Length: 368
Image 1: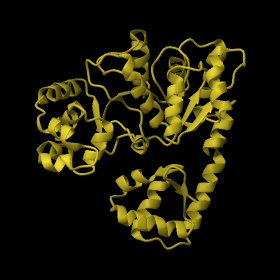
Image 2: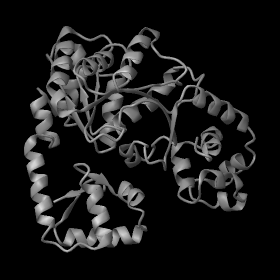
Image 3: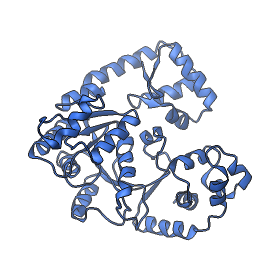
Image 4: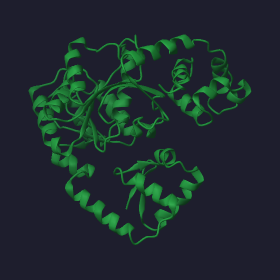
């Protein structure tokens, strides 16, 4: 276990310190240093103030953190802190990314292609057929499928992924000491057995209470490249996830349905309001995401183009990061490059001027 884990868990236990405040604190010092810092230093940090600083200085409940570590060690659960190399990098682009995640499984949370597939709990045969067909057609692309382990479309997506040899990750609204719904215990075991995983920000003994699900949904949306809504009413968890994905500048797709079918009312609304792109199959998804073979050919052309440009060491580091996927957020570049923010800014500007990289909306960058 990481020697700082005690303080990392403790940070999630401090009253009034949520993911946003934790990220602010971690910009100034490490987890352990936060608890040893002077109160006047903490309260001067923008977004913290005297009340939160007082909560940190008076925090004594390290016993809960120690108990959590015992549970983690016993069941060989991975802890993923914001600054860990295996933390889902796409989540770092979200302002409210979880401070600490608990993970059981082998699926790569930073795989090159990750989509979440979501929908209603009480699905129709149409939704079942669409879900299974879509995932089957994506099998050759080795896409990782993420969903929320709920009844309905979520479970269909996980099962179809297993059937087609794709890794699938279930994001939970409770701790890893249980599976909810209990009927999906067998499904969870199958997911782990076939190279998938179970992920949560919640500690053990956390019940799947209603208020935990929006938090779960933000992880589902935030760790994926794209969100695909198969079937949903105008209200519900799937609509929340789609809205969150939009807020994170993620691609959102929706399967259209009959205008008379209330179970498709949410999908039709997302398309009509331009909050989602209409999707009819895997081929469209691959083209819109740039995951088809032609994209690989373009990447080769880019690599050949770079041979004619003399890059500085800092620029080479940034290029190597951008080569890994279609677009990368500036926060991830800063975090992974190991360079100062000033050095990153200077290198990025020079690369843009040479037309090697292109800036996108939402502080994202890609190779030109």
